[in-house]
Length: 320
Image 1: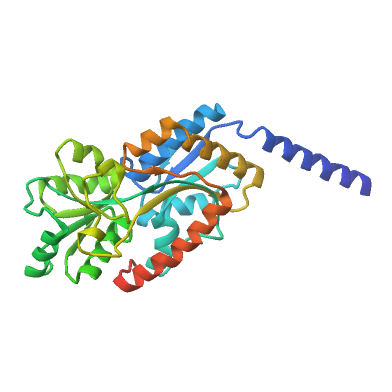
Image 2 (image 1 turned 180 degrees about the vertical axis):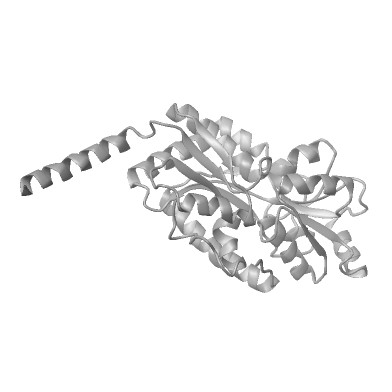
């Protein structure tokens, strides 16, 4: 009996290894914890399309929006750790929300295995073309003359888009009224029409509208200018030194996902992000392709949690 038990255990281990070696042998689901059309969705669809070509299996993008990304992220945290349910996580879901929400349904560190950082993205301060604000200085002056009269939209309370505005208020010493929406795609029409004055949106969400003349780019939130918007100054160089509030996007799997599967995914994503085609595709959206190891992505997330905890505390932002 003892020998039989050992044989069975060995057989199961061999079968598990064989299953891992054959991964993937069925469709993969990539969950986007925000609505379709936003930057997270754009990043997920770009990565999914390349993974599908690499693996020869369908990679289905599934939008599960709500609660600042917590609903979709929690879904993946509780999914089977077999490599067939992945998350396109963000600075919000894995660095900001932990400080913003008094009660989280998942642990951003313990419940996930980071796979690869996909891209870094600046936010862009935009307004309707006819809005009489041409610079950061103009916006600060207007906000000081009429506290709370200036409105700024966001894709939801607690997102990096919202906190970019809160950080701006804090460093500029002004008051502006936050108007949250359910995703960037819902907010942008009101910004383009002038119903809301400005927005600090992710570059990929607004690039086509800037190029099409439907939005005016005033400044970018990154520490250096975006190659895709080379003529647009940073907020830091426009009078608020030290201002930096970029977004990032990366693929994560549920905790417990076998290392060989995580490594296979990570290597495939990193290889994809080094291709000229993918770099140009993301650069055209105002994003910078990254691609790194699970260990590097893990260290990045931990550093970002510490950084954004300070921003959230200083801003006083909270979401119930």
